[in-house]
Amino acid sequence: MGFELHQDVERVSAEIGYWLGQPYWGRGIMSAAVRGATVYAMQKFALTRIYALPFATNAASARVLEKAGYTLEGRLRRSAIKEDVVMDQLMYAITDQDLT
Image (cartoon, rainbow, N blue to C red; front, top):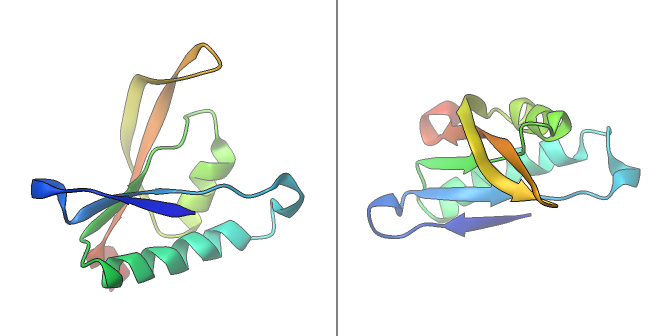
């Protein structure tokens, strides 16, 4: 898991990324980890917003974000490519106000 911090006018925002090995899927581990890391990053780096961009076909990742308190804000059509396939991404985000 990691955060990509932004600069200049977006310095209050960051992107979160994460990965969990398949043997550990379905146990709630990643949802809890994303939630805890989100709270930590908001405080540590004085962030107001953290977002994630899972592939639209990755329902499990979308569920992780929803369980961690993130909100679906939209769909970025044809915004990424993986293994020569152009795909949509989903924009999930959480703000400091959502954590109170």
